[in-house]
Length: 171
Image (cartoon, rainbow, N blue to C red; front, side, top):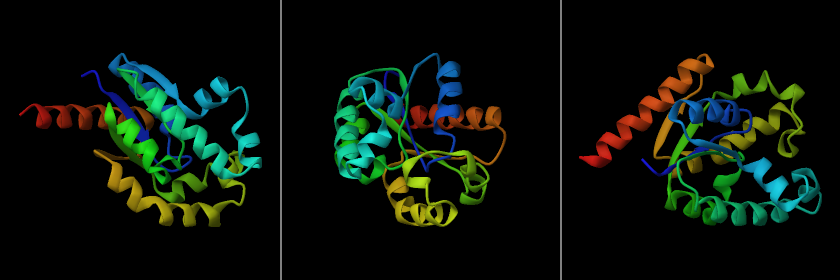
């Protein structure tokens, strides 16, 4: 398969760490979209958010369009990418969208040491974000994999879901 694997999910759901492992397993390239945006725009996401979330989302749309032209790449997106239809349409053009679903209570254990702009208000905001976004994650997802076990087991589940999806598409 030449398509990209685009991982969506809540902040703290494991998109980056599991995405890296999945890319190694599939022998794909790996791109963390937030790092890509920071490096290609030569500024931090926090500085974009200081100008307003809309500034960051505009850069995210542009980056989505750029990354849609890659192939055989696992792309770890930012948690809010699903709020921008243009980003999702671009990524879906050459990508299989995998929603990595991790329970909020599991994410909460990790956010104390997190510096992401939308998580600065802590646990109550995390639950609000989940409730605001869950339907969009499900809407855009071609595949849904729960992240409730150890990393290696979840990566195996991701790879198996991708293989199953490919088999169905080829029939």
